[in-house]
Amino acid sequence: MRKYVWKQWLCAAALTALVLSGCGQNASAAGNIPDTAMTTEPVEDTAGADMTKGKADGPEDQADVQSSASMVEIKDMGGRSITIPAPDKLERMYPDGSTSLLLLYTLAPDRMTAAPSNTGNAFSEEQRPFILPEVCDLPSYGTRSGKGNLNLEEIKNADMQVILSMGTGKISEKDISEADELQAQLDIPVILFSGDMEDYQEAYRLLGKVIGREADAETLIEYTSKIVADIDKAVAQIPEKDRITLYYAEGDDGLATEPASSNRSYVFNASGAVNVAVVDAAAGYGQSAVSMEQVLDWNPQVIITQGTTHAYETILSDPNWATIDAVKNGRVYKMPSNPFSWADRPPSVNRFIGLHWVTNLLYPDLYDVDIVDLAIDYYKVMYHVDVAREDMEGLLVDSVPRK
Image (cartoon, rainbow, N blue to C red; front, top):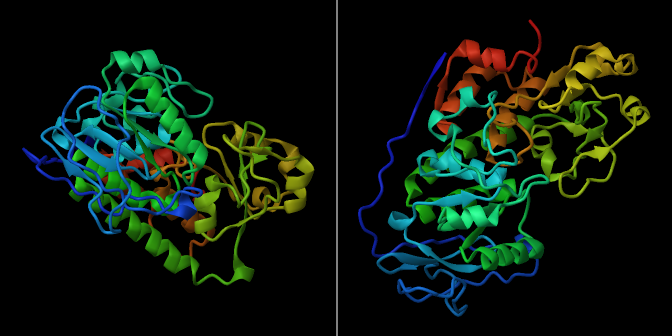
């Protein structure tokens, strides 16, 4: 079947200075927040210190972090100055949702002590074969993802030192306000990360410096950046007139979707698809409602279904869908969803494997790769597990063309 692979992480024994450069949030990514470097003073390890104290009066290239024996002051991706434990003192972090969970798990699964969930079980039975067993049964104190809520009392009782907060897109003024409110409620520093795919490098670098894993963060950045570069190179060769039309079918009936303007459509857009859904993007959880008549009129060449629903089975069995080109030509595919979706839900750093998958589905002659081999390598690097080829083929049985 498979075996699990732990990376051998090395942490510095003592830190006298920690420099976080380039972790500021620019104005375009954070509403009207100025792109100003934050100058901080060394922080004494005293009770009741102001977690957001700082002064904005330094040169652009000045260090964003200075350390004392046990505390450091950082500037998060929302431009907020926060005092947190130094990397060698930071032992208990709580990701507040699935996007921040993915950020932490891919970089440092051994640093996880709890995992967000609505149900109390962070990982389902279907997910467990594809993640490290050490994280499967971690305690959960709620989540901000979907329609969930955090259990603030349990988080306090667990003596969490830091909350990792990551949304699904660019940081907004609302995100900053909510992070400040949560920080005040918990009296625990909240580190805000951008959830936009354009900012993933900065997110990894910030987390790497917060936990003392800078080199490991750069390894993941290099790996994922190569994926993006390879896809960009391939897609650039496709004339607009030859691009494949695609419909993303969500919900059990397949009649919900994400248009190209949705931040949940990143993988489809980047892979050179023409998203046929001409609807407004729904805020929050997404899933814009559409009618059967609209889908028939759009007549997509390819349909990708949400992997955690019955849309795949519905579309292949319901005669209402039978006249659509994608159905007639056998080009309906279920999105792989274990341990995490390959293109959406959560819309986090799990989406890089989806670039390989969708580009190969749409343009197999131009992007001729062995998706099983690529997925096995991806799971080893990003999810820290070795997956046998037969198990990966089983995961993809409805996600690739039938032989």
